[in-house]
Image (cartoon, rainbow, N blue to C red):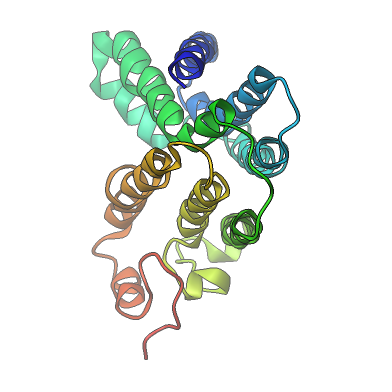
Length: 257
């Protein structure tokens, strides 16, 4: 377990350092968002190759679940950053960090994100370092639950993209589709997918330790970089305050009357 974790840590360090160089060349730190999803694909396949034997559960996680999620997310983000300026969050940091921008970008954006990536990948690393387990109903439940999460993230992102691309919606607030039942259906979906991957890892030795992964994802989404930033962006708007009163913040629920 420690040997595989150390190998993954070194590879993540090199991976994120490479993306940091790319960010300097392109002069936009939002490539870190692109590196995020692809990094999990890279790590999951690294673990599978390290395993060096056929493991159905690990192959399902690496080839089916993480790869589908990572490539879809990267494709979504690439479409966003390739057609516009640097993300406003990174642009603001570029301005406020001044002469320390390069160092702080490396430490606070790329290496910090790499650390989060490593911790969130714990269920996969644990599976790679454990004895093989047979495919069970628990694994099947986890996979089915993952597709529910994928639906909320992928469909939520698509509905929002279509809404924003319509000029007639400029200045309006997305409140239809999945966004009628949750103010952040895509974040809910992402959280559910990582809980599902942890469930798939059940049966592996030290699988309880892997709970760090979905818990960390929920903390990041609910209290750090996901929900709080968007809620703050729209706070005070009359339409948003009305939207808040009737719509669940995270878990999709029927809207309140």
